[in-house]
Structures are given as C-alpha cells and as structure tokens.
Length: 86
Image (cartoon, rainbow, N blue to C red; front, side, top):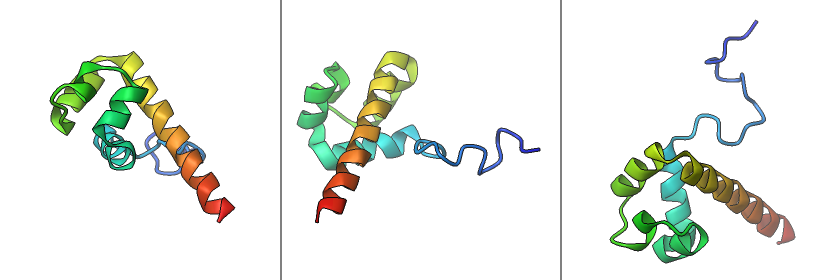
C-alpha cells in the first residue's frame, strides 16, 4: 500500500511535485507579465509584478491559484500540440 506522500502516488497528475514558484516562473517565461495579467486579471500581475508578490497573493487566494494552475495546464497542452504539429 502506498502512502499519499510517495512519489508515484499521483502518476497522472501533471501538477504533482511542482512548486507554485515553478508554475509562476514558467507562465511568466511563456506569456510575460502583460500576457499573464491579461489572462488572469489580478493586480499582482499587472501593477509592479514580481514573483515574490505573486506568490504571496496566490498562497492566500485559492480561486486565483486555481486559475493559475488551469492556465499552466492549458499552456502545457498548447506546447504539446505545437510540438506534435511540427
């Protein structure tokens, strides 16, 4: 029997093992701060954005974190499709 903390307890969850900082950094690298603010309209992405302020806000705001995780999964699907199309 596996415990919930074992590494392969969620083998099909693409977010398993990723930190919030990694997800924010990947989205900023892909979309940039303006693109991220356009897709998720929150002040921490639009006005004087930084990784630290975004993490602070996202840890306190579950709905924003859910949107961020959904956008990350969408980005992964986009990248997978564009890679398969080539």
